[in-house]
Image (cartoon, rainbow over all chains, first blue to last red):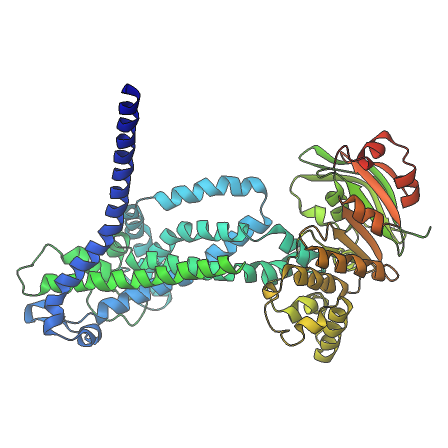
Length: 301
Length: 251
């Protein structure tokens, strides 16, 4: 009798513990949904009064008179993201190829934790470093070199800081991708008489290509959403930038700088929520595309 | 016996762990030499020493000589591309290059600077016919090679190796991942090809060795225990290790 009682007790205890794990899981899955629902709900206020297309293509951002044109912010974000990817992608690719194909084993063993540590540095530190080093460098050296008198707070500064931040993130993925290329595939190419470089160029990189593209995609989504470090060096001027030395005002900075202030202006918080929604959607799209590429190539091979 | 390759006092270690211990071996020309042995005995390492794929292993150390047509290919002064194009490699599992069927065959040719389209077309057809794959793939040469079945892929890999016009075929348990029919196809192909090529076949399947071998080498823990004609080795083994291997006491 006692025995049965005990097993029953254990059964219930088991169920209870399984239960809260499921609740934790559901909570984790629910949070993003609640988040998106909240963003949509809040931004509906603005979307009900103005058309989406109008908001996205207008350059006029004057909340006091009720004009919310998102184009300057979207363009700034795109400039910074693409530019930072142009800087970091080749660096990452070449570093990953060197570390996985050429370097001695101990180099990779040392580099792996170093890269992890770099990836873990708080972004505000990169921002401070940007203000102390990159901004003056652009203002005093790079700007005059191109015959421009600039403050240094610019798209370029944001892109440089950002590229340094996403390098460890993308590098880690690329190293794993290159290490996943089977040794036998390289041997097959070499035994056909290909040199090491020919093998890397025509076989290894080709095999890894979808993975490379998706790691760049994930890096881009990371860059697109990065806020604080960029905000500190980018200038935050509401204008469509026409060159890399000009200041910009990316979407995340818009939200971080303004939310909580001047919310008495009608529709202002709704506009900021719409900015957040746009940000969310773009990052989500980058992520889904990249994951899809990874899954597709994994099932292929 | 007309020797093609002489291996003299070949020793190889990885991170000071000896893999091959003082291997001495003669591989006859235009014959099938079967290297038998249990897994981990150094068969594959020996095979990959021949086209110097062992160079890639980190921490590898090597001494001794491998003499191919009178030249020691372990000398620094040798052109690696030349050595490797003299030997086609067939691995345990097919690893088609990440490109089309057509480009898998032409890869080695393009690497050595042959770009003439008609020449390449002819070569592709010739070698695919040679491995009995032409009829199955002639209408989809532009498809990725990964779309083929495992058996087809292995034949493609054989054709790819033959297309660079080697003198030697190195085969590392080439049928271990294949179904019986594909295995037999590869075996029959080897028996056909041995008139033109020197074949070195690594296997742990005793019956395959009996079917294929003109010359047998038995390895055990990195050493060559015994070598000779199949008749000598299978019917009159001298070494106790050979005897216990043949009687199935270990694999």
